[in-house]
Image (cartoon, rainbow, N blue to C red; front, side):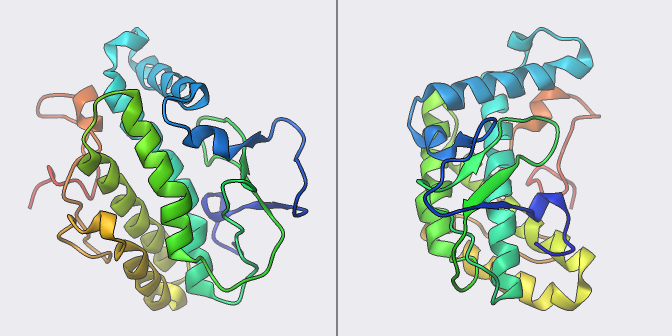
Length: 227
């Protein structure tokens, strides 16, 4: 999205085209128990273990799955929220059959969407067709509470709007309005707070388990945070 940075950016390919490697079909990640999603979780697990010099199995797999899920969900949601806030942009074409990605770590996952025109980010499609299947598939890899995973989604929605508001203050009102529309999805009904400055989710992404004790790692919108 113009002027919002790589977290909101998407590549565009011709409708019906099959992008060449290293592009991969995003639909492969949506199959419960799928090997591609499992491999991604294990890669995230190794990355989380690396800074502390720990073996990968020292990182609970459920933590890695939650962190992986949060990153992928946020990457899907951010450009959709931006499109809804900006309005009148080409449709994101966020259809599982047409969405492609690159399996990279350490930054925003590259996404490519088919060229099409439409009106905004289409929240039901993004949540129902992509985020919900991703959430369900992640939950089959290891026992992890659906409330944690859907809390990740709520966090991603509010975070996307917050980043837009910070970078483009003139879009703040539209960004928060778009985020509230996304957050109105029935799967997010357990969240007590609506997107906005000071948003706090009703669960934790579990990252604190990597840094227990007084110095534990807590995200800014975590339910475990002070206040």
